[in-house]
Length: 193
Image 1 (cartoon, helix red, strand yellow):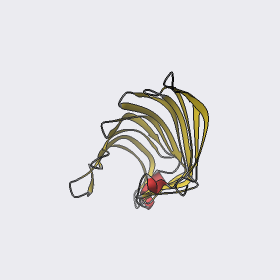
Image 2: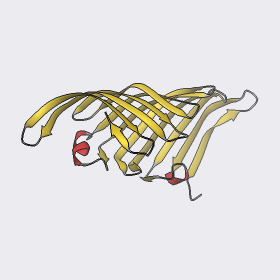
Image 3: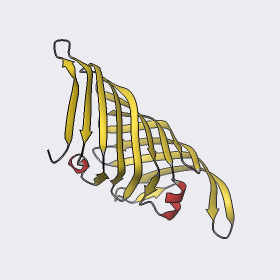
C-alpha cells in the first residue's frame, strides 16, 4: 500500500491462542498515517511476537535516517527493546540512540549530540509513564521521569543530571548539576522550572 510494505513470517496457533515466532517486517512506512505531525526518511521496523495472544512477549527494532515530530528531529535514530503485555498494560523497554537532535536550538543541539536513552516506559489507560530513564550524550549524564497523556497531549518531563563542559560565553566551561521540570501550560506554552 501507499502507507507501508509489511511482510509477515512465522505463525499463530488459533487453537492455542498464541503467537509462534510471528515476525513482522515493515518497510516504507508513512508515519503520518499514525502520527500526523511526524515525518521520517527511510523508516523501517521489525517486530517479533511470541506467546499468548492476550499477553504476548515482543522484541522490536525501528530505524530511520531521520525522524521528526513537529520541529524536533533525530538523525540516524534507532529504537529497540524486548518486553511484554500484561493485560491492559504494555511495558516497553526502550534503548534509543540518535547521532543528532535538531530543531531544539544551537545550544541544545550541541549538548544533545550522540543521544542514548535507556529505560522502560509503561503504556496504560492512555498514558505513557517512565521512571529512572537513563539519558546520556557526549555532555549529559542524567535520569528522566516521563508522564504523558496521549488523549490530551499534555506531558510532564522531569530530568536530573549533569552537563559536562558547558560553554558560557565570556565565562568559560563549567559543569552544571540540574533538576529540571518541563511541562506545557493550558495554552500549550512550555515552561521549564
